[in-house]
Image (cartoon, rainbow, N blue to C red):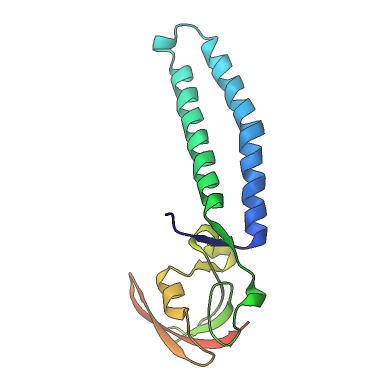
Length: 156
């Protein structure tokens, strides 16, 4: 049996909308691209047609992967989780004790991670080190560049 994927209800809706868009507009545009490429003549030597068919395969693969993700999705709600330790959907303010910089992270599933938005995967080295930690604790993250020590400053 496939592993569960934990998603927020907002992210679930985003994925559903994207799948619908890919299945309707994406497939229609792909069919038009293939039809146009087919009009260029002999399919055995038609690079445009080959490229369009490859792109169609990638589109269908993306749709399939997203549908698989939805089939394994479990909705999580932060209000159902304890607020005295770090867990998925925790907003954590940490101080990097190596360089004294302060970071705000939201721990999310790997499928929702976006470092630019401060969303880190709970399966990442930093995410793993923070999981289960309590306010005021110091944790060590084993990252490719070495070991980073973090102090938990706040937790919501």
